[in-house]
Figure 1 (cartoon, rainbow, N blue to C red):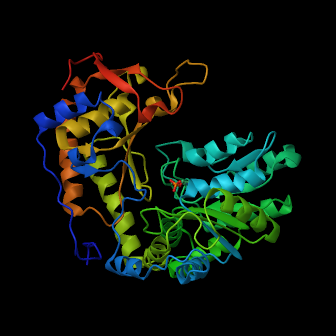
Figure 2 (cartoon, protein in one colour):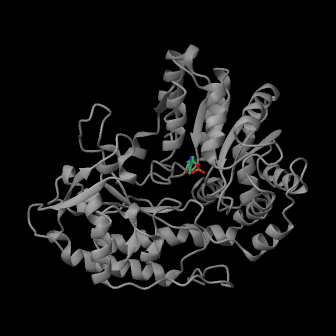
Figure 3 (tube, rainbow, N blue to C red):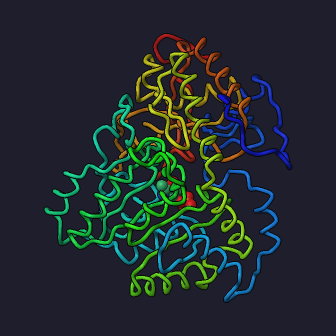
Length: 462
Ligand SMILES: *Cc1c(COP(=O)(O)O)cnc(C)c1O
């Protein structure tokens, strides 16, 4: 059969509060044109993030009722630990409330002034935790990974020559080598098993621990199966185990590929490091058999890990993004290709050339998608990255809008509606206004800044 169906039925539903275009024009104006300031009830299709926003299965909800809230030694912890070790054969599993808590603990041990940590591309919380420790975060992804037009099958791969040179030049100051699968900050692009193994071998050669940020390990394994020579006949579980077998440690946000609404972990093999990590865990998160989670969360994640490696789910999951990318491409909307695992990225700077990068074409497109269709995406461009600590501003490398898909939450007709919204935006796009920031905080301004509209070349506004 050609049609890939959602491999689930719907048992519980959440109604979407319908709004009109007129209402949304007023709502976003009242939010000072910042999509983070909207109430989520005022959004029809929320593609702000895929983090913690997915649907849990009936089996996960059932597992929640089994959650044992004992402070120490809860059977829920042992089920969670077994589910992690079944996929990721690490000796120690340390539960945390989110991925960033695992990072904070890890870099309280490995970070520090003068240290430099390479990765394909650090995710922003990883970078934040490294920099907060005084260390430097260095991105060494292959050149194709920075080119939105490149169709390389593994755009998340590490540049091996640059990694080797980096380790040779900085040998004394590098505490570990990291790899993020899939490469979230680089568009959800996958890393090949061959590249992971090569990075692990280089790390070993320089005697450095190799650490995987594994948030989207199952999506990455699907891409390996689909695209890597010799992997096509293999099971997802076997590929996942191969990925983690070559690593010394991992960090995880269970809000991604563990089907959780909250949770995370740090897993590692080294006994001394595990002892240091547990000491920090007890001080900042909780006792080692619950960390930052309730027993019921641990149960939901144990079940979620069993479900996420299902081939039928992953085929549907990855196909959803590819479908949206193909349809947008056919409409002439410039999109980052090939489709990543969890999101579609639209090149707003290329699509809205009449808006100067310093008038935020990504923001202009994100606001238009909301006004026209009630879609909430996220600007990833000059609003997010353009401001420097000195207070100056320059255009970011790209002005993108990210449409991230929550897991098992929306259906094919939501995707078709999204395409229709783009058709309508295509009709009015040459008249869309730019934006100016009227207030911003000192750090991470995109979450809370306020905007007003400015004329941008051709038009006077939608
Ligand atoms: C989400 C994410 C994190 C941080 O996890 P949280 O659970 O949001 O704290 C770290 N790395 C990557 C690649 C992520 O996508």
